[in-house]
Length: 603
Image (cartoon, rainbow, N blue to C red; front, side):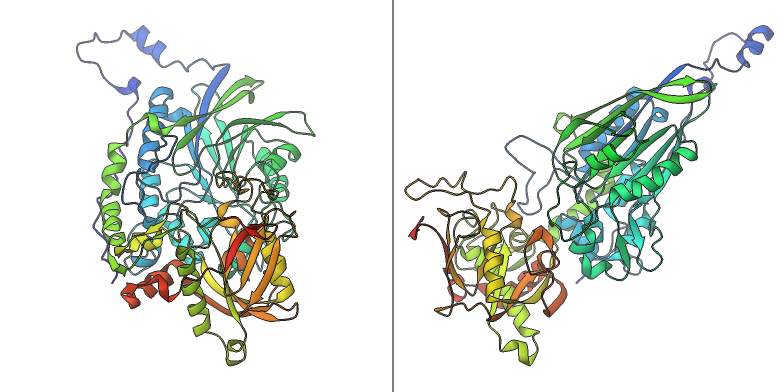
Protein backbone atom coordinates (compact mmCIF):
# COMPACT_ATOMS: atom_id res chain seq x y z
CA UNK A 1 0.00 0.00 0.00
CA UNK A 2 1.24 3.56 -0.66
CA UNK A 3 2.70 5.26 2.36
CA UNK A 4 1.23 8.61 3.31
CA UNK A 5 3.70 11.45 2.67
CA UNK A 6 5.43 12.82 5.71
CA UNK A 7 4.98 16.43 6.68
CA UNK A 8 8.05 18.42 5.76
CA UNK A 9 9.04 21.79 7.15
CA UNK A 10 9.24 24.20 4.25
CA UNK A 11 12.64 25.64 3.48
CA UNK A 12 12.74 29.35 4.32
CA UNK A 13 15.12 31.61 2.47
CA UNK A 14 16.58 34.35 4.62
CA UNK A 15 17.40 37.59 2.85
CA UNK A 16 21.06 38.47 2.73
CA UNK A 17 22.19 41.68 4.40
CA UNK A 18 25.07 43.48 2.75
CA UNK A 19 27.99 44.61 4.81
CA UNK A 20 27.36 48.25 3.80
CA UNK A 21 23.98 48.19 5.49
CA UNK A 22 25.21 46.94 8.86
CA UNK A 23 25.67 49.56 11.55
CA UNK A 24 28.78 49.04 13.65
CA UNK A 25 28.28 49.86 17.32
CA UNK A 26 30.63 52.44 18.87
CA UNK A 27 31.75 54.12 15.63
CA UNK A 28 31.73 57.93 15.36
CA UNK A 29 28.99 59.65 13.38
CA UNK A 30 29.94 60.51 9.82
CA UNK A 31 30.68 64.18 9.04
CA UNK A 32 28.56 65.95 6.38
CA UNK A 33 31.51 65.79 3.97
CA UNK A 34 31.92 62.07 4.61
CA UNK A 35 28.20 61.50 4.20
CA UNK A 36 28.26 63.34 0.89
CA UNK A 37 31.18 61.27 -0.33
CA UNK A 38 29.39 58.10 0.69
CA UNK A 39 26.50 58.92 -1.64
CA UNK A 40 28.74 59.17 -4.70
CA UNK A 41 28.14 56.34 -7.17
CA UNK A 42 30.87 53.71 -7.14
CA UNK A 43 33.47 53.91 -9.86
CA UNK A 44 32.71 51.50 -12.68
CA UNK A 45 35.10 48.53 -12.65
CA UNK A 46 36.90 47.68 -15.87
CA UNK A 47 36.95 43.94 -15.18
CA UNK A 48 34.70 41.47 -13.40
CA UNK A 49 34.58 37.76 -12.72
CA UNK A 50 31.85 35.26 -11.91
CA UNK A 51 31.37 31.48 -11.89
CA UNK A 52 28.82 28.95 -13.07
CA UNK A 53 28.70 25.72 -11.07
CA UNK A 54 27.44 22.59 -12.79
CA UNK A 55 26.11 19.16 -11.85
CA UNK A 56 24.70 16.45 -14.08
CA UNK A 57 23.16 12.97 -14.03
CA UNK A 58 22.27 13.19 -10.34
CA UNK A 59 19.70 10.39 -10.90
CA UNK A 60 18.01 11.04 -7.53
CA UNK A 61 21.11 10.25 -5.50
CA UNK A 62 20.36 12.34 -2.44
CA UNK A 63 22.86 10.72 -0.06
CA UNK A 64 26.01 8.62 -0.28
CA UNK A 65 23.90 5.48 -0.22
CA UNK A 66 23.35 2.36 -2.31
CA UNK A 67 19.72 1.28 -1.85
CA UNK A 68 20.40 -2.07 -3.53
CA UNK A 69 23.20 -2.90 -1.08
CA UNK A 70 21.56 -1.16 1.91
CA UNK A 71 24.94 0.40 2.66
CA UNK A 72 27.07 3.43 1.87
CA UNK A 73 28.08 3.66 -1.77
CA UNK A 74 31.47 2.12 -2.48
CA UNK A 75 33.67 1.87 -5.53
CA UNK A 76 37.34 1.17 -6.20
CA UNK A 77 38.20 4.87 -6.56
CA UNK A 78 36.73 6.04 -3.28
CA UNK A 79 34.01 8.18 -4.84
CA UNK A 80 31.18 9.60 -2.76
CA UNK A 81 27.70 10.31 -4.10
CA UNK A 82 24.69 12.46 -3.41
CA UNK A 83 23.22 15.93 -3.58
CA UNK A 84 23.86 16.41 0.13
CA UNK A 85 27.59 16.02 -0.38
CA UNK A 86 27.95 18.11 -3.56
CA UNK A 87 25.91 20.77 -1.74
CA UNK A 88 28.90 21.36 0.53
CA UNK A 89 31.09 22.11 -2.49
CA UNK A 90 28.46 24.48 -3.84
CA UNK A 91 28.24 26.40 -0.58
CA UNK A 92 32.02 26.57 -0.34
CA UNK A 93 32.19 28.17 -3.77
CA UNK A 94 29.52 30.70 -2.87
CA UNK A 95 31.25 31.55 0.38
CA UNK A 96 34.59 32.06 -1.36
CA UNK A 97 33.32 34.07 -4.33
CA UNK A 98 30.13 35.67 -3.05
CA UNK A 99 26.61 34.45 -3.80
CA UNK A 100 26.08 37.24 -6.32
CA UNK A 101 29.09 36.00 -8.29
CA UNK A 102 27.83 32.40 -8.68
CA UNK A 103 25.15 30.68 -10.79
CA UNK A 104 24.16 27.01 -10.40
CA UNK A 105 23.05 24.82 -13.32
CA UNK A 106 22.31 21.12 -13.93
CA UNK A 107 22.55 19.15 -17.19
CA UNK A 108 19.71 16.67 -16.63
CA UNK A 109 18.70 13.15 -15.57
CA UNK A 110 17.37 14.18 -12.18
CA UNK A 111 14.26 12.15 -11.32
CA UNK A 112 15.19 8.55 -12.22
CA UNK A 113 17.89 6.13 -11.20
CA UNK A 114 17.49 5.05 -7.57
CA UNK A 115 14.87 3.36 -5.44
CA UNK A 116 14.09 6.80 -4.05
CA UNK A 117 13.24 8.01 -7.56
CA UNK A 118 10.99 4.99 -8.13
CA UNK A 119 9.27 5.42 -4.78
CA UNK A 120 8.18 8.99 -5.52
CA UNK A 121 7.14 8.07 -9.05
CA UNK A 122 5.23 4.86 -8.42
CA UNK A 123 4.78 3.98 -4.73
CA UNK A 124 3.85 7.38 -3.27
CA UNK A 125 3.78 9.37 -6.47
CA UNK A 126 4.16 13.12 -6.57
CA UNK A 127 1.25 13.09 -9.06
CA UNK A 128 -1.22 11.79 -6.49
CA UNK A 129 -3.86 13.87 -4.76
CA UNK A 130 -1.99 15.85 -2.11
CA UNK A 131 1.11 13.98 -3.27
CA UNK A 132 4.48 14.68 -1.67
CA UNK A 133 7.14 17.00 -3.00
CA UNK A 134 9.87 15.25 -4.90
CA UNK A 135 13.02 15.10 -2.76
CA UNK A 136 15.09 16.31 -5.71
CA UNK A 137 12.89 19.39 -6.09
CA UNK A 138 13.22 20.06 -2.37
CA UNK A 139 17.01 19.75 -2.47
CA UNK A 140 17.55 21.73 -5.65
CA UNK A 141 15.22 24.50 -4.53
CA UNK A 142 17.11 24.74 -1.26
CA UNK A 143 20.38 24.98 -3.16
CA UNK A 144 18.87 27.73 -5.36
CA UNK A 145 19.53 26.22 -8.74
CA UNK A 146 19.15 28.74 -11.56
CA UNK A 147 18.28 26.25 -14.32
CA UNK A 148 18.43 22.60 -15.35
CA UNK A 149 18.35 20.89 -18.74
CA UNK A 150 15.93 18.07 -19.35
CA UNK A 151 17.60 14.66 -19.39
CA UNK A 152 16.28 11.71 -21.36
CA UNK A 153 15.45 9.87 -18.12
CA UNK A 154 13.15 12.74 -17.10
CA UNK A 155 10.61 11.14 -19.46
CA UNK A 156 10.78 7.58 -18.04
CA UNK A 157 7.73 8.00 -15.82
CA UNK A 158 5.65 9.90 -18.37
CA UNK A 159 5.06 13.55 -19.20
CA UNK A 160 2.46 14.07 -16.45
CA UNK A 161 4.95 13.24 -13.70
CA UNK A 162 7.61 15.38 -15.36
CA UNK A 163 5.18 18.32 -15.49
CA UNK A 164 4.40 17.85 -11.80
CA UNK A 165 8.10 17.87 -10.98
CA UNK A 166 8.52 20.98 -13.12
CA UNK A 167 5.83 22.78 -11.09
CA UNK A 168 7.58 21.84 -7.85
CA UNK A 169 10.87 23.36 -9.00
CA UNK A 170 11.69 27.03 -8.33
CA UNK A 171 13.89 27.09 -11.44
CA UNK A 172 13.15 26.37 -15.11
CA UNK A 173 13.62 23.00 -16.79
CA UNK A 174 15.10 23.90 -20.16
CA UNK A 175 14.75 22.00 -23.43
CA UNK A 176 15.01 24.05 -26.61
CA UNK A 177 14.83 20.92 -28.77
CA UNK A 178 11.90 19.32 -26.92
CA UNK A 179 8.95 20.35 -29.07
CA UNK A 180 5.20 19.94 -29.05
CA UNK A 181 4.50 17.24 -31.65
CA UNK A 182 1.57 19.12 -33.20
CA UNK A 183 2.79 22.72 -33.23
CA UNK A 184 6.55 22.03 -33.29
CA UNK A 185 6.91 24.87 -30.82
CA UNK A 186 8.97 24.47 -27.63
CA UNK A 187 7.15 22.32 -25.07
CA UNK A 188 9.49 23.58 -22.35
CA UNK A 189 11.26 26.87 -21.79
CA UNK A 190 14.22 27.03 -24.22
CA UNK A 191 16.45 29.40 -22.25
CA UNK A 192 16.64 31.79 -19.33
CA UNK A 193 18.60 35.00 -18.74
CA UNK A 194 20.27 35.72 -15.41
CA UNK A 195 21.85 39.02 -14.39
CA UNK A 196 25.11 39.38 -12.53
CA UNK A 197 25.00 42.71 -10.67
CA UNK A 198 28.07 44.91 -11.06
CA UNK A 199 28.21 48.07 -8.88
CA UNK A 200 28.54 51.20 -11.01
CA UNK A 201 28.39 49.28 -14.29
CA UNK A 202 25.85 47.49 -16.50
CA UNK A 203 24.65 44.09 -15.35
CA UNK A 204 26.33 41.10 -16.95
CA UNK A 205 23.56 39.25 -18.77
CA UNK A 206 24.08 35.50 -18.83
CA UNK A 207 21.92 33.50 -21.22
CA UNK A 208 21.51 29.82 -20.33
CA UNK A 209 20.23 27.59 -23.14
CA UNK A 210 19.09 24.04 -22.37
CA UNK A 211 19.26 21.17 -24.85
CA UNK A 212 18.18 17.59 -24.31
CA UNK A 213 18.81 14.29 -26.06
CA UNK A 214 17.01 13.46 -29.33
CA UNK A 215 17.22 9.78 -28.38
CA UNK A 216 14.17 10.32 -26.16
CA UNK A 217 12.05 9.83 -29.28
CA UNK A 218 13.30 6.22 -29.37
CA UNK A 219 13.97 5.33 -25.76
CA UNK A 220 10.71 6.69 -24.37
CA UNK A 221 8.60 6.30 -27.48
CA UNK A 222 5.66 5.00 -25.45
CA UNK A 223 5.58 8.14 -23.34
CA UNK A 224 6.25 10.80 -25.98
CA UNK A 225 4.98 9.48 -29.33
CA UNK A 226 2.38 11.86 -30.78
CA UNK A 227 2.94 14.28 -27.92
CA UNK A 228 6.48 15.52 -28.30
CA UNK A 229 9.17 15.66 -30.97
CA UNK A 230 12.91 16.02 -30.47
CA UNK A 231 15.21 17.76 -32.93
CA UNK A 232 18.99 17.99 -33.05
CA UNK A 233 21.08 20.02 -30.65
CA UNK A 234 23.03 21.80 -33.38
CA UNK A 235 19.85 22.74 -35.23
CA UNK A 236 18.19 24.32 -32.21
CA UNK A 237 21.36 25.98 -30.91
CA UNK A 238 21.71 27.72 -34.29
CA UNK A 239 18.21 29.05 -33.78
CA UNK A 240 18.45 30.25 -30.19
CA UNK A 241 22.05 31.40 -29.66
CA UNK A 242 21.60 34.38 -32.06
CA UNK A 243 18.33 35.26 -30.30
CA UNK A 244 20.08 35.31 -26.95
CA UNK A 245 22.83 37.53 -28.32
CA UNK A 246 20.19 39.82 -29.83
CA UNK A 247 18.60 40.12 -26.38
CA UNK A 248 21.89 41.52 -25.11
CA UNK A 249 23.39 38.44 -23.48
CA UNK A 250 27.05 39.11 -22.71
CA UNK A 251 27.69 35.44 -21.96
CA UNK A 252 25.98 32.50 -23.67
CA UNK A 253 26.16 29.28 -21.67
CA UNK A 254 24.70 25.94 -22.73
CA UNK A 255 23.63 23.03 -20.57
CA UNK A 256 23.43 19.93 -22.80
CA UNK A 257 22.19 16.50 -21.87
CA UNK A 258 24.41 15.14 -24.62
CA UNK A 259 27.97 13.80 -24.61
CA UNK A 260 30.88 15.34 -26.44
CA UNK A 261 32.29 12.74 -28.81
CA UNK A 262 29.82 12.96 -31.71
CA UNK A 263 28.67 9.34 -31.32
CA UNK A 264 25.20 7.75 -31.27
CA UNK A 265 24.27 4.47 -29.61
CA UNK A 266 21.31 4.12 -31.93
CA UNK A 267 23.36 4.22 -35.12
CA UNK A 268 21.38 5.77 -37.98
CA UNK A 269 17.99 5.09 -36.42
CA UNK A 270 17.55 8.85 -35.90
CA UNK A 271 18.75 11.73 -38.10
CA UNK A 272 20.20 13.53 -35.06
CA UNK A 273 23.40 12.83 -33.13
CA UNK A 274 23.09 11.56 -29.56
CA UNK A 275 26.36 12.96 -28.15
CA UNK A 276 26.57 16.26 -29.98
CA UNK A 277 27.97 18.83 -27.53
CA UNK A 278 31.30 19.01 -29.36
CA UNK A 279 29.45 19.54 -32.65
CA UNK A 280 27.41 22.35 -31.11
CA UNK A 281 30.59 24.08 -29.94
CA UNK A 282 32.24 23.58 -33.31
CA UNK A 283 29.36 24.57 -35.58
CA UNK A 284 27.37 27.22 -33.70
CA UNK A 285 29.05 30.61 -33.24
CA UNK A 286 28.46 32.75 -30.17
CA UNK A 287 28.80 30.17 -27.39
CA UNK A 288 31.18 30.71 -24.47
CA UNK A 289 30.93 27.42 -22.55
CA UNK A 290 28.92 24.19 -22.33
CA UNK A 291 28.03 22.03 -19.34
CA UNK A 292 27.86 18.46 -20.67
CA UNK A 293 25.86 15.49 -19.37
CA UNK A 294 24.46 12.08 -20.31
CA UNK A 295 27.55 9.87 -20.66
CA UNK A 296 28.47 9.43 -16.97
CA UNK A 297 32.10 10.29 -17.55
CA UNK A 298 34.35 12.99 -16.13
CA UNK A 299 35.83 15.54 -18.51
CA UNK A 300 37.23 18.31 -16.35
CA UNK A 301 37.95 20.73 -19.20
CA UNK A 302 37.79 20.27 -22.96
CA UNK A 303 38.24 22.96 -25.60
CA UNK A 304 36.62 23.03 -29.05
CA UNK A 305 37.39 25.73 -31.61
CA UNK A 306 34.40 27.13 -33.45
CA UNK A 307 35.01 26.72 -37.18
CA UNK A 308 33.26 29.96 -38.11
CA UNK A 309 34.74 32.38 -35.58
CA UNK A 310 37.93 30.63 -34.50
CA UNK A 311 36.89 31.18 -30.90
CA UNK A 312 37.57 28.52 -28.28
CA UNK A 313 34.57 27.07 -26.44
CA UNK A 314 35.16 25.42 -23.07
CA UNK A 315 33.22 22.25 -22.24
CA UNK A 316 33.13 20.29 -18.99
CA UNK A 317 31.29 17.17 -17.83
CA UNK A 318 31.32 16.41 -14.10
CA UNK A 319 31.00 12.79 -13.05
CA UNK A 320 27.50 11.49 -12.32
CA UNK A 321 25.49 11.03 -9.08
CA UNK A 322 26.93 14.11 -7.38
CA UNK A 323 30.47 12.72 -7.37
CA UNK A 324 31.84 15.90 -8.98
CA UNK A 325 31.03 19.57 -9.34
CA UNK A 326 32.17 21.53 -12.38
CA UNK A 327 33.33 25.11 -11.81
CA UNK A 328 33.38 27.44 -14.82
CA UNK A 329 35.26 30.68 -14.09
CA UNK A 330 34.62 33.65 -16.39
CA UNK A 331 36.58 36.87 -16.56
CA UNK A 332 35.15 39.87 -18.41
CA UNK A 333 36.25 43.33 -19.45
CA UNK A 334 34.01 46.38 -19.93
CA UNK A 335 34.69 47.72 -23.43
CA UNK A 336 32.76 50.79 -24.60
CA UNK A 337 29.99 50.02 -22.15
CA UNK A 338 29.66 46.34 -23.10
CA UNK A 339 31.03 43.31 -21.30
CA UNK A 340 33.38 41.05 -23.24
CA UNK A 341 34.55 37.61 -22.06
CA UNK A 342 38.34 37.58 -21.85
CA UNK A 343 38.88 34.21 -20.17
CA UNK A 344 36.91 31.01 -19.55
CA UNK A 345 38.27 28.16 -17.50
CA UNK A 346 36.75 24.95 -16.13
CA UNK A 347 37.67 22.39 -13.51
CA UNK A 348 35.92 19.64 -11.55
CA UNK A 349 35.87 19.30 -7.77
CA UNK A 350 35.59 15.92 -6.03
CA UNK A 351 32.80 15.56 -3.50
CA UNK A 352 34.76 12.90 -1.58
CA UNK A 353 36.81 15.76 -0.12
CA UNK A 354 33.88 17.10 1.94
CA UNK A 355 31.12 15.94 4.27
CA UNK A 356 27.38 16.04 3.59
CA UNK A 357 25.71 19.40 4.11
CA UNK A 358 23.69 19.48 7.33
CA UNK A 359 20.84 21.57 5.91
CA UNK A 360 20.23 19.34 2.88
CA UNK A 361 20.62 16.23 5.04
CA UNK A 362 17.92 17.48 7.41
CA UNK A 363 15.56 18.23 4.52
CA UNK A 364 15.91 14.79 2.90
CA UNK A 365 16.47 12.36 5.77
CA UNK A 366 12.80 11.48 6.32
CA UNK A 367 12.30 10.71 2.62
CA UNK A 368 15.45 8.62 2.53
CA UNK A 369 14.49 6.64 5.66
CA UNK A 370 11.06 5.93 4.20
CA UNK A 371 12.62 4.46 1.05
CA UNK A 372 15.16 2.40 3.03
CA UNK A 373 12.25 0.84 4.91
CA UNK A 374 10.40 0.16 1.65
CA UNK A 375 13.31 -1.56 -0.15
CA UNK A 376 13.92 -3.81 2.85
CA UNK A 377 10.39 -5.21 2.66
CA UNK A 378 10.49 -9.02 2.34
CA UNK A 379 9.13 -10.64 -0.84
CA UNK A 380 9.87 -14.32 -0.09
CA UNK A 381 12.71 -16.83 0.02
CA UNK A 382 15.06 -18.32 -2.56
CA UNK A 383 16.37 -21.89 -2.46
CA UNK A 384 19.72 -20.97 -4.04
CA UNK A 385 22.00 -17.95 -4.37
CA UNK A 386 21.44 -16.19 -7.71
CA UNK A 387 24.55 -14.17 -8.53
CA UNK A 388 25.13 -12.08 -11.66
CA UNK A 389 28.92 -12.00 -11.17
CA UNK A 390 29.57 -14.21 -14.20
CA UNK A 391 26.46 -13.36 -16.19
CA UNK A 392 28.37 -11.50 -18.88
CA UNK A 393 30.16 -14.62 -20.11
CA UNK A 394 28.12 -17.54 -18.73
CA UNK A 395 24.46 -18.51 -18.80
CA UNK A 396 23.32 -17.92 -15.20
CA UNK A 397 20.18 -18.61 -13.19
CA UNK A 398 20.04 -14.92 -12.26
CA UNK A 399 19.50 -13.95 -15.89
CA UNK A 400 17.14 -16.88 -16.41
CA UNK A 401 14.94 -15.41 -13.68
CA UNK A 402 14.57 -12.21 -15.75
CA UNK A 403 13.84 -14.27 -18.87
CA UNK A 404 11.25 -16.35 -17.04
CA UNK A 405 9.35 -13.29 -15.83
CA UNK A 406 9.50 -11.61 -19.24
CA UNK A 407 8.24 -14.68 -21.09
CA UNK A 408 5.44 -15.44 -18.63
CA UNK A 409 4.29 -11.81 -18.69
CA UNK A 410 4.27 -11.61 -22.48
CA UNK A 411 2.63 -15.02 -22.84
CA UNK A 412 -0.29 -13.96 -20.64
CA UNK A 413 -1.11 -11.04 -22.94
CA UNK A 414 -0.74 -12.55 -26.43
CA UNK A 415 -3.62 -12.92 -28.85
CA UNK A 416 -4.73 -16.44 -29.75
CA UNK A 417 -2.90 -16.30 -33.07
CA UNK A 418 0.36 -15.00 -31.61
CA UNK A 419 0.21 -17.43 -28.69
CA UNK A 420 0.81 -20.24 -31.21
CA UNK A 421 4.22 -18.77 -32.13
CA UNK A 422 7.42 -19.80 -30.35
CA UNK A 423 8.23 -17.39 -27.51
CA UNK A 424 11.74 -16.37 -26.49
CA UNK A 425 13.31 -13.62 -24.38
CA UNK A 426 16.30 -11.29 -24.63
CA UNK A 427 17.78 -9.32 -21.72
CA UNK A 428 21.04 -7.76 -20.55
CA UNK A 429 22.96 -7.94 -17.29
CA UNK A 430 22.61 -4.49 -15.72
CA UNK A 431 24.76 -5.12 -12.67
CA UNK A 432 27.51 -7.69 -12.22
CA UNK A 433 27.33 -7.14 -8.44
CA UNK A 434 23.64 -8.07 -8.24
CA UNK A 435 22.85 -11.06 -6.03
CA UNK A 436 19.58 -12.60 -4.91
CA UNK A 437 20.64 -14.45 -1.76
CA UNK A 438 19.73 -17.91 -0.63
CA UNK A 439 17.11 -17.56 2.10
CA UNK A 440 15.12 -14.40 2.81
CA UNK A 441 14.85 -11.97 -0.12
CA UNK A 442 13.81 -8.30 -0.07
CA UNK A 443 12.63 -5.81 -2.68
CA UNK A 444 16.14 -4.34 -2.89
CA UNK A 445 17.62 -7.77 -3.69
CA UNK A 446 15.33 -8.19 -6.68
CA UNK A 447 15.58 -4.54 -7.73
CA UNK A 448 19.36 -4.77 -7.72
CA UNK A 449 19.17 -7.30 -10.55
CA UNK A 450 17.05 -4.98 -12.70
CA UNK A 451 18.01 -1.40 -11.93
CA UNK A 452 16.30 0.36 -14.84
CA UNK A 453 12.66 1.39 -15.18
CA UNK A 454 12.12 -0.45 -18.47
CA UNK A 455 8.71 -1.73 -19.48
CA UNK A 456 8.01 -4.85 -21.54
CA UNK A 457 7.23 -5.63 -25.17
CA UNK A 458 6.66 -8.70 -27.28
CA UNK A 459 7.94 -8.17 -30.83
CA UNK A 460 8.02 -10.49 -33.84
CA UNK A 461 11.29 -11.44 -35.48
CA UNK A 462 12.04 -14.05 -38.13
CA UNK A 463 14.75 -16.63 -37.61
CA UNK A 464 17.08 -14.71 -39.93
CA UNK A 465 16.44 -11.47 -38.05
CA UNK A 466 16.98 -13.20 -34.71
CA UNK A 467 20.37 -14.43 -35.87
CA UNK A 468 21.29 -10.90 -36.97
CA UNK A 469 20.19 -9.66 -33.56
CA UNK A 470 22.37 -12.17 -31.74
CA UNK A 471 25.33 -11.47 -34.05
CA UNK A 472 25.03 -7.81 -33.15
CA UNK A 473 25.05 -8.73 -29.44
CA UNK A 474 28.08 -11.00 -29.94
CA UNK A 475 30.31 -8.05 -30.89
CA UNK A 476 30.36 -7.45 -27.13
CA UNK A 477 33.25 -9.93 -27.01
CA UNK A 478 36.79 -9.40 -28.23
CA UNK A 479 38.02 -11.92 -30.77
CA UNK A 480 40.13 -14.57 -29.01
CA UNK A 481 41.78 -17.11 -31.38
CA UNK A 482 41.43 -20.82 -30.71
CA UNK A 483 44.12 -22.06 -28.34
CA UNK A 484 44.46 -18.67 -26.65
CA UNK A 485 43.47 -18.48 -22.99
CA UNK A 486 40.34 -16.45 -22.25
CA UNK A 487 40.64 -13.84 -19.51
CA UNK A 488 37.24 -12.81 -18.20
CA UNK A 489 38.69 -9.45 -17.15
CA UNK A 490 39.38 -8.54 -20.78
CA UNK A 491 37.21 -10.77 -22.97
CA UNK A 492 34.33 -8.28 -23.11
CA UNK A 493 34.31 -5.07 -25.08
CA UNK A 494 32.54 -3.34 -22.21
CA UNK A 495 34.38 -0.04 -22.51
CA UNK A 496 32.56 0.77 -25.74
CA UNK A 497 29.78 -1.84 -25.93
CA UNK A 498 28.56 -1.59 -22.36
CA UNK A 499 27.10 -4.43 -20.30
CA UNK A 500 23.60 -2.95 -20.53
CA UNK A 501 23.90 -3.10 -24.33
CA UNK A 502 24.65 -6.83 -24.47
CA UNK A 503 21.55 -9.01 -24.80
CA UNK A 504 21.56 -12.75 -24.18
CA UNK A 505 18.63 -14.93 -25.17
CA UNK A 506 16.51 -17.65 -23.59
CA UNK A 507 14.12 -20.04 -25.32
CA UNK A 508 16.61 -20.80 -28.09
CA UNK A 509 19.99 -22.53 -27.86
CA UNK A 510 23.13 -21.17 -29.49
CA UNK A 511 26.89 -20.81 -29.27
CA UNK A 512 29.00 -17.66 -29.57
CA UNK A 513 32.31 -18.54 -31.20
CA UNK A 514 34.67 -15.79 -30.05
CA UNK A 515 37.47 -17.17 -32.22
CA UNK A 516 35.54 -15.84 -35.23
CA UNK A 517 35.28 -12.31 -36.56
CA UNK A 518 32.27 -10.12 -35.75
CA UNK A 519 29.24 -11.09 -37.79
CA UNK A 520 30.18 -14.78 -37.98
CA UNK A 521 29.99 -15.87 -34.36
CA UNK A 522 26.49 -17.33 -33.81
CA UNK A 523 26.61 -21.11 -34.29
CA UNK A 524 24.09 -23.93 -33.86
CA UNK A 525 21.05 -21.69 -33.33
CA UNK A 526 18.18 -24.08 -32.51
CA UNK A 527 14.67 -24.05 -31.09
CA UNK A 528 13.49 -27.21 -29.31
CA UNK A 529 16.45 -29.08 -30.77
CA UNK A 530 15.73 -28.10 -34.39
CA UNK A 531 17.75 -25.59 -36.39
CA UNK A 532 16.03 -22.21 -36.58
CA UNK A 533 14.71 -21.56 -40.09
CA UNK A 534 15.21 -18.14 -41.66
CA UNK A 535 11.46 -17.66 -42.16
CA UNK A 536 10.40 -19.02 -38.76
CA UNK A 537 8.56 -16.33 -36.75
CA UNK A 538 9.22 -15.77 -33.05
CA UNK A 539 7.66 -13.55 -30.42
CA UNK A 540 10.56 -11.94 -28.57
CA UNK A 541 10.06 -10.64 -25.02
CA UNK A 542 12.19 -7.48 -24.86
CA UNK A 543 12.30 -4.27 -22.84
CA UNK A 544 10.99 -1.00 -24.27
CA UNK A 545 14.45 0.57 -24.53
CA UNK A 546 15.67 -2.13 -26.85
CA UNK A 547 12.30 -2.55 -28.60
CA UNK A 548 12.34 1.10 -29.61
CA UNK A 549 15.87 1.01 -31.02
CA UNK A 550 18.09 1.50 -27.98
CA UNK A 551 21.73 0.46 -28.57
CA UNK A 552 21.16 0.16 -32.29
CA UNK A 553 20.09 -3.50 -32.55
CA UNK A 554 18.88 -4.48 -36.03
CA UNK A 555 15.25 -5.19 -36.98
CA UNK A 556 13.71 -4.86 -33.51
CA UNK A 557 12.51 -1.24 -33.69
CA UNK A 558 10.58 -1.84 -36.92
CA UNK A 559 9.25 -5.27 -35.88
CA UNK A 560 5.53 -5.91 -35.43
CA UNK A 561 4.23 -5.59 -31.88
CA UNK A 562 2.55 -8.63 -30.34
CA UNK A 563 2.43 -7.32 -26.77
CA UNK A 564 3.16 -4.17 -24.79
CA UNK A 565 2.79 -3.17 -21.16
CA UNK A 566 3.32 -0.07 -19.03
CA UNK A 567 4.45 -2.21 -16.07
CA UNK A 568 8.15 -2.05 -15.23
CA UNK A 569 10.01 -5.33 -15.69
CA UNK A 570 11.51 -4.88 -12.22
CA UNK A 571 8.04 -4.66 -10.63
CA UNK A 572 6.93 -7.71 -12.62
CA UNK A 573 9.89 -9.57 -11.11
CA UNK A 574 8.95 -8.45 -7.59
CA UNK A 575 5.32 -9.44 -8.16
CA UNK A 576 6.36 -12.83 -9.58
CA UNK A 577 8.57 -13.52 -6.57
CA UNK A 578 5.88 -12.40 -4.13
CA UNK A 579 3.32 -14.70 -5.76
CA UNK A 580 5.71 -17.68 -5.70
CA UNK A 581 6.72 -17.02 -2.08
CA UNK A 582 9.61 -19.46 -2.62
CA UNK A 583 11.76 -19.06 -5.72
CA UNK A 584 13.45 -22.26 -6.93
CA UNK A 585 15.88 -21.87 -9.86
CA UNK A 586 15.28 -25.51 -10.78
CA UNK A 587 11.88 -24.37 -12.09
CA UNK A 588 13.33 -22.07 -14.77
CA UNK A 589 17.15 -22.18 -15.00
CA UNK A 590 18.31 -23.74 -18.29
CA UNK A 591 21.78 -23.57 -19.81
CA UNK A 592 21.00 -22.67 -23.42
CA UNK A 593 23.99 -20.58 -24.62
CA UNK A 594 27.76 -20.70 -24.22
CA UNK A 595 31.00 -19.20 -25.45
CA UNK A 596 33.18 -21.38 -27.68
CA UNK A 597 36.45 -21.18 -29.61
CA UNK A 598 36.15 -23.06 -32.90
CA UNK A 599 33.43 -25.18 -31.32
CA UNK A 600 35.27 -25.92 -28.07
CA UNK A 601 33.48 -24.58 -24.97
CA UNK A 602 35.42 -21.82 -23.19
CA UNK A 603 34.05 -22.72 -19.77
